[in-house]
Amino acid sequence: MSEVDAQIARASEALERARERRSSLSRRAGRRREGTVIRRVGAIALADGLIIAIALMIGMVTPLGTLGAMIVMGLLIATTLVIAFARTDAAPTPEKLAETPLKALPLQTEQWLEGQRLALPAPARTLVDSIGVKLETLSPQLARLDEREPAAAEVRKLVAEQLPELVKSYQQVPEPLRRTERNGATPDAQLVEGLKVIDQEIATMTAQLAQGDLDLLATRGRYLQIRYQGDEAL
Image (tube, rainbow, N blue to C red; front, side, top):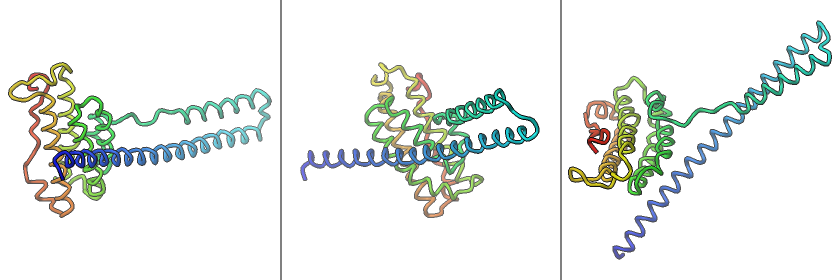
């Protein structure tokens, strides 16, 4: 296989991984929307049923009349509309990630990271896909990990603190300066390098959790050193 063929094969594999990840995100988003619809329909039925029951009890004591019937109808319509169009949970933010339960952290981080995609350079988007795949693999392992374990704190530090801080620091750099070299590297290159470290760290954590090496994960002491703190460092 020639070098050109190898590059084409690698590019095809990367595109396939990205496609599979986005498809996975779409499926899970669809399931969440279905769950939300079911919960809302149930809430509407419960609320409207309660209003009707109260109206019937009042009607047994005193006739509601036309005005009373109109009030009941208005309450039913208003309640239905309020529940149907109530705001759903807002998109994840770095602040929300820090408070997210550990078992939900991989998916929430994926969603947040996907929202940053268009603001990142092309090489970083490839790493976003790779990190997303690894987070999806990590998810069932975190579901079984006790929040009180030191290992849980290490995972949370990397995924909910260091990853968002790296991306946020990059985004604070004015767009025209992101490809300007300073101290031997451009902000674009620094971002890509930082994402590579995070990608590797998540892979290591996943392997250690799979092997049950919680003590090793908790004490290994290898953290991503965030060197990209705002415009000055970048």
